Amino acid sequence: MAEEHGLSFLEFIEKNLNEEEELNEALYRKAVIRKGKKKLKWYSDKPGFKIQYDKNGIPHEKRITGAERRRRRLGQRTGKVKRAAIQGKIQLRQQLSNRLGKMTGIRKGAKNTGTSLNAAKSFLSKEYPIMDDKFNITDLES
Image (cartoon, rainbow, N blue to C red; front, side):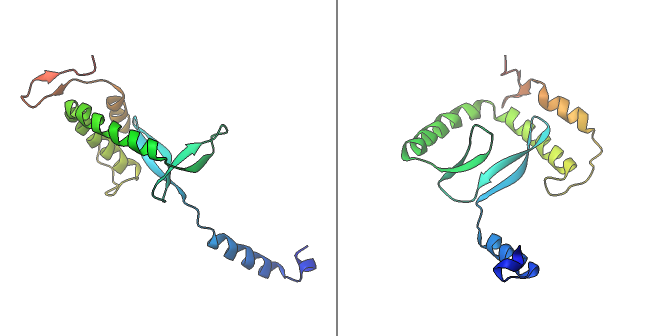
């Protein structure tokens, strides 16, 4: 079939490969850890765009509107105040997530640290009390 168009098979493949290289896809996947499990998350490399999934679960780029940009900025402002209240728990989960990332090979320094992967997963899934700035144990989840 490629012979009908005057191209050999190798020329046809080279032409198609060059066309694919010219396509600059802006979507890429990144491995993240959520609740002790490795997940793949879609990102866009274009500034001002977000990822939105259609009804079949296929990701697409969509431009962030001015109104949404404003809502995000205001939400970040209130989120900053709320995050300050549970910063200790956030840091604890961040350390555990980094440890799991190293064990699974997502983050740098990937080596077995000797801790059990299942123990770390169960710790991430449970609610534990934390210490506040004055070293008082508090449970912010209840």
